[in-house]
View 1 (cartoon, helix red, strand yellow):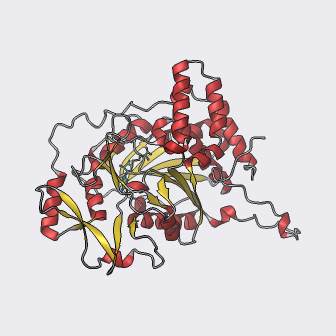
View 2: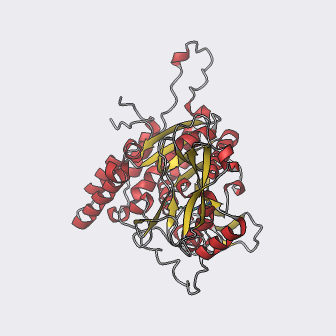
View 3: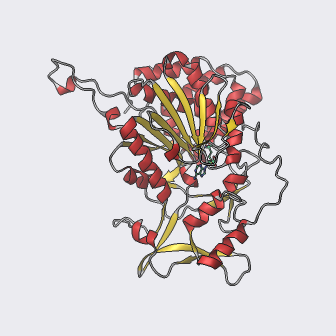
Length: 449
Ligand code: SAH
């Protein structure tokens, strides 16, 4: 069924489309900062493998979650802490790095949710795992184009980032050289700065440190980087998969199945589970609970986009190095580790305190947000052949079901009031006369007619 999008959201989208950025800016993989992190890397890296084998020798096999946490976010040798992994020269590429259109459409989504919430005076944009800062930068671009819509609303940007090195790249993207690092380890804000438009930007190590207040949370390819526990169904019941040293090959790691239940295998498997191999991202569940509580208490919305499934997949833990699959246990710390996000688990963890929408495919979300109309404008304004080709290629990458279009899913958490019919006005008798709530962008088909 073709439903109509909220009129206001439609207007927002058309205003963004009327003022296109130069087409060449909307395409292409962003190379600007890709070398930033490698400069100054003169010291040899401490060996992650050595660190892990010491740990396993001292305490016994470790859980996959502990392995993943150490490999990705160990403060000295962690993959995210040390590497610039995003882009054509890195290990993987993400949608905001492929095309600016992606961030623009998310910017419109955020504004439309802010309007749907009654245009609160303060808007905190909170991004979890901002990578190079490209997504936030494109979102803020839309905000500045639609300044008159935001009116007197004060906007601030809050970035949750585990990597000090990546935070420097984000700062360069968003604030030029204006940001300063905190001099105290105890300061929850480890870096702060201001955009050229005067918007304050704050960096935190974890979500708990972000101040309370009406917030829109964005997490793109963040949840897939969080540690997962993995479990195997055995004749004796559920057992956790652990990482151990391979006794037959020196300096090699291997998976083993715990002979007895672990705290995680006792606590994290749902009684109705039917699969025989299961991955559970407990950290992701905790973060969704924190976001939900904030939405209930302070208002706001969350948009989570990642590759994932709705509680159906079994074994998705994998590594990426140089845009190719990489054995998760070999040369730990040199490759990205990731697992598909289980959206049904996130929905369970939200626990009904907020409304959950989706997951819907990236193709559907972007089309519902009007990516086709946006492309039309860009192509109309572009006569340069190679740029047109690049535009078409990046569009195809984002929406083609064989590429990112169906592998990536969008999921939203909303305050229940957002989907409720407005209270009847005085004198109104029939419930049905109350206007329906505005549809939520991306999850409902858009109509430009
Ligand atoms: N959202 C960006 C980057 C995705 S890569 C994009 O789509 O392009 C994952 C990001 O999450 C990186 O910025 C990484 O440093 C950050 N990250 C990974 N684990 C994290 C954690 N536990 N806490 C905070 N940030 C984390």
